[in-house]
Image 1 (cartoon, helix red, strand yellow):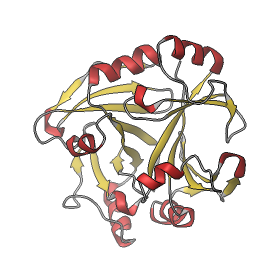
Image 2 (image 1 turned 120 degrees about the vertical axis):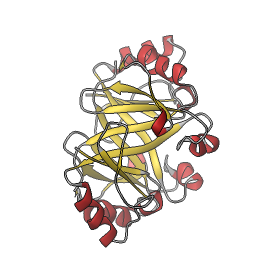
Image 3 (image 1 turned 60 degrees about the vertical axis):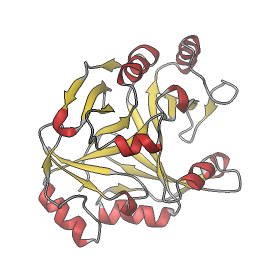
Image 4 (image 1 turned 45 degrees about the vertical axis):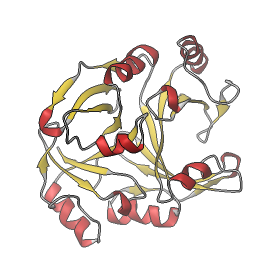
Length: 134
Length: 134
C-alpha cells in the first residue's frame, strides 16, 4: 500500500527563523512561504534530492497544528506523508484492519491539491500518518 | 550541505507490534529485526521507494531512545537523518553558524557503519537531526 515518502512535516513556531535554519545553517534549497488559509498553515518546502520536508507555521485561529505547538513550543516533527495509488482502497483496507481514519473518513483535498487522509497516531506507534493519492 | 533523507526514525515500545502495523496493516516491505547492542536499539527497516523508515526499540539498560519513550510511551518520530558528502566539513560549518553538535563533536560510526553526528534539537525547531556521511 505505502509508496514514496511524499514529505515529512515539521511544525515550527517561527517560520522565518526555521527558514533561515534550513537555508543558511543547513544549506538546503528552501521555497518562499505559501499561506494556505484553508489548511490553517503557512508552509515552506525544503527540497531534498529524494523527498521534501515541509515547515508548517500556524495560520489563523483554528490551525490544525496549534495544539501540537502548545505541547511542543519549540516545534517538532508533526507527521509523515506516504503516497498511495488509490486512497479509497487504502482507506477501506485500513478500516478493515481496525485502524482509525481521522475525521469523517472521507478524503479531503490536501495542501498539494490531492486527496489526503490522516490515520490515528495511537494506531501507529504515536506517529501521525498522512496518506496522499498521487 | 543537506543531501538525501537517508531515513526517518520512529521510536517504538514494541517492535513486534510495530512491525506488524507496517507489514500487515500498511502493506510495506519490512526487514527482519536486527539487534545493534552497541547502539542500544533493535531496528527494523521499512523500505519505501525513495527512502526508509527505521523502527527502533530500546535494547539494554542505556538505550539512547529510553528517555524519549519515557516521555512518549506510545512511541513517536525520533529523528530525521540527512546524508552529507563530508561530515567534517558539515560539522565545522554548523559549528561556525553557532549550531550545537551533540556529544564531543567527533563523528561516531552509526548503525549503518558510516560516520554520523547528531545536532541539538533546540537549534532546529525541536527536531533531532542526524547527519550521515555516505
